[in-house]
Length: 362
Image (tube, rainbow, N blue to C red; front, side):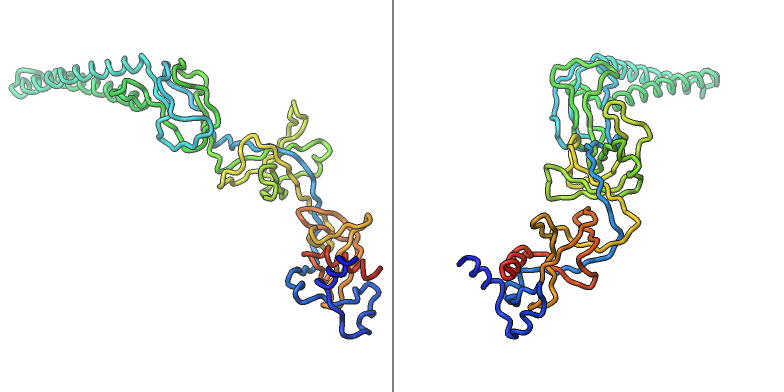
């Protein structure tokens, strides 16, 4: 009893006008203390279209347009790897080295063609000299020039292949470089792994700056979900954070395994908080064709199986008011009755005031 009295002294002080104390049967009969007044917040109901929250589930997936599965164009044995699963890599970074007989063949072909080009150049010079002296014909000169051009084209082809495979003649290996920047989301090689040309992917790199959330839409909700709907997404990893997005597309074919339609939400993921494979809770916001007053759900007080708000008129007129709820979604509660649009409610520390009101009424 003593504790309750002390809280009452902290929160309220007596009104100076006795008549004002009993002007309303719901009035607390006391004024709000100035010190405690700085610890409350006021909110005014807003009239807006009612939104209904439809609970769904989903999972985070990488954008397939920004995923690269690397397949080697040559076979051989992996001699070294310089990355791990989950690493952030940049375009052009060396990820692995591959020893291959094809490198030896290309290097041999390169040396051979260089020698042949030198011989062809000498031959062209000799025929050009004889042509100038009137000994060789123009046909002989053109044939010598054509032979040299063909050899140079072959050299360019060999060098292009060496460049394509990022050959390192000094180490005698092909260097496997990252084709793009992103996160390594799959890896199937290690030192000593034997690989074949155009076989299974060696690794997968995903750009996770933009991800997809694939939402499960069950048959009972198909009629309520449509393209363009706003959705709120929450994860267990970040329980206090809401990721907002829109439904970009809805599949027209049921998933054979899960027996659901898949809806796609595209989200920017600049801080890389959303990881592929994360299970998320999705709330689709369906706007109804009716208007109602809305307040913050956090301003509600639930007591004795009923919902209340604390209505503020002035420091000496504060009352608890029973309200009827129409629906809740997105942190808002829509009311069917209980308060007017021009009234104000207390939305912070309202429970302390509500308890004091009950004490003084009793």
